[in-house]
Amino acid sequence: MRLIALLSLPLALAACMPEEPAAPAEPPACQAASFQGLVGQPKAVLGQMLFPAGTRIIGAHDPVTADFNPARLNVEIGHNDRIAKVACY
Image (cartoon, rainbow, N blue to C red; front, side):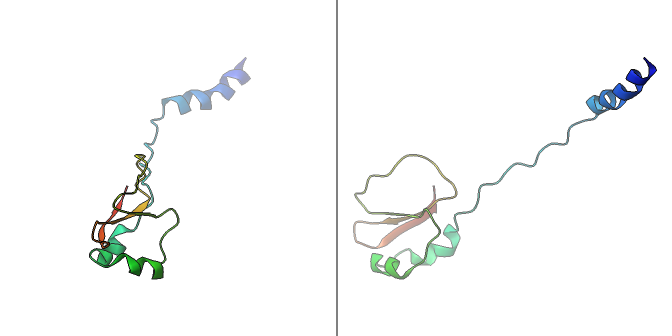
């Protein structure tokens, strides 16, 4: 009986210890800040660029999904065939 009490003591003490809060997980950055210099440039420059995997090039009339992904880089082309916006969503 004494052995059972001694073996259960660490479990009882562990239950009383406060849990350490987990650090909030940050989504990976989409690197939009690195590509802001493209805004205003003609869309032809995009053919020479290397973008992160999953990047979307969105034309003025292109349909896009509404799912939010903060790690996804999006390059929007305006009606004038120039890059209008570079953002994460």
